[in-house]
Image (cartoon, rainbow, N blue to C red; front, side):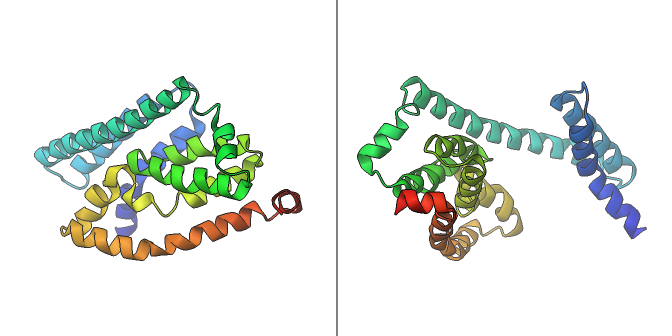
Length: 212
């Protein structure tokens, strides 16, 4: 019985992933609604959730989705402003004026700029924006992706205007202020991350010759 409960609990997530992997003509919206339908059926027929609980959960999920969409919209709007003002096209020139050292340029992009994007947007936006910019600086695609993802790791708890703290961890601990303080304390290890990133940057002989 416990195995059946585990399978039913995981089935919406597994169905969604399988449909994404093996979809043909189905759109993401159709897959999402189908998964939602399966989840509601399981909740009503197996978990015996009252209809009022299911309805309330749907409404709460809708509000959370709107919150996320507004944050992502703000990030896209910010990126479009940068593009319209040709900031991204002149980025290499701006960074060269600041410092010609590739290490400092990468820190400015993948640490400061990416953490800023994580704070206002989150949800993968920083890595998506910064990785192509790192490639424009001359990094290989693989190295640019690794650096962008690693540098984005420490700021995630406070990303998307604090959504993980406000919605995620606050549900575990109602004392969200205490939780935020504890998270910030553990997040001091983030100061070590730039060292790992610079190690990835200079890990190839070609980059060592360029940097040194």
